[in-house]
Length: 180
Image (cartoon, rainbow, N blue to C red; front, side, top):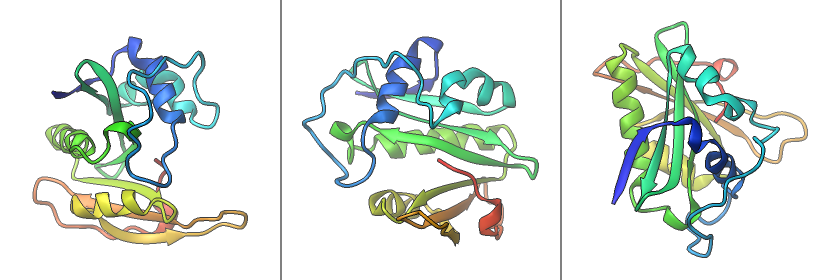
């Protein structure tokens, strides 16, 4: 059974391990073991995961984990932005549990919580080297609003937005996007 709940400090090591799993390529990989052994240190390239309470919760956002049969198998959070919307970050689902509705449950709960706090839109980005993620967000009603490419990148960043609680869809330029 899948449950979605708010982050607890004791989740950190497992979330760091989840973040380290490949997120490019096949959408599911049943060979990755569950449960994940906790990582000893936060990922250097994602400093916001080093202190979820400070970088998400203290900023008025939320950070959720998904559990399957008592094991952490997914995560994601949002932070409010000054225009009344929210930036979605660090959405990950364990490769052995993908395509089971866990990502959808996480995103639905994030959207409901953001709307409950009066936020009007969710924005996020992913990359063209993650076509399953692109299809996933589009299937949830996210609309592509821009793309960005930088020298040295082997991918293109794709920006998405979704209106919450019946509000109109805004347009956003690629320069205003954030990272997941």
